[in-house]
Length: 171
Image 1 (tube, helix red, strand yellow):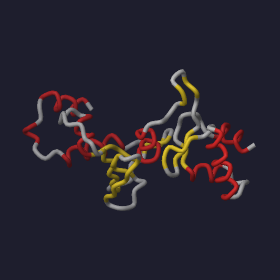
Image 2 (cartoon, helix red, strand yellow; image 1 turned 180 degrees about the vertical axis):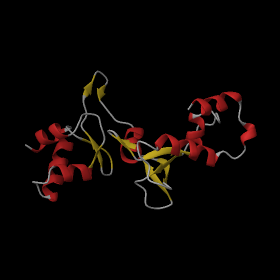
Image 3 (tube, helix red, strand yellow; image 1 turned 90 degrees about the vertical axis):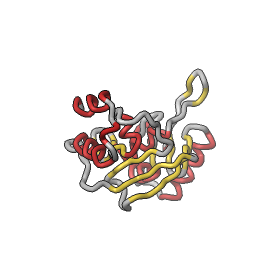
Image 4 (tube, helix red, strand yellow; image 1 turned 135 degrees about the vertical axis):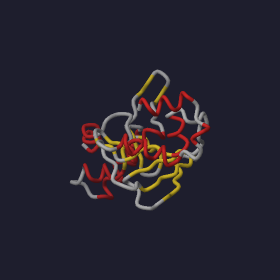
């Protein structure tokens, strides 16, 4: 019964946060929900990606499917369905616009979901930096916020090449 509800409510191969499970299936106690999740883990019908993050796998020709860290970051800190509440920042943002060719090891995200000014998180051995947004990021202002964030991070504009300038102008 519990497993059927999970399969109805949540999509396959998408991150499921424990808070979502507890909110969606309120008719069961918290302890019973965790026992059922543990049972589903043992059966292989749900997989624990990291603490508090699960997904419903599918079987592929290569074995059981998996999800990526970027799917989790997107869903938790950037956007969910049609709602946008975060943007990339730092070197990844500069790389996206062609301002730099550097590929960052540590991704930075500015999000409404962060309450502290700056915080480091670790997911499966990778480090990410979360920053609190200056204003509320919405679907309407996300692109403007991203371009303003880019301008606030560019240290020396005279190092930019023509391709980077064209990309920013076209955006």
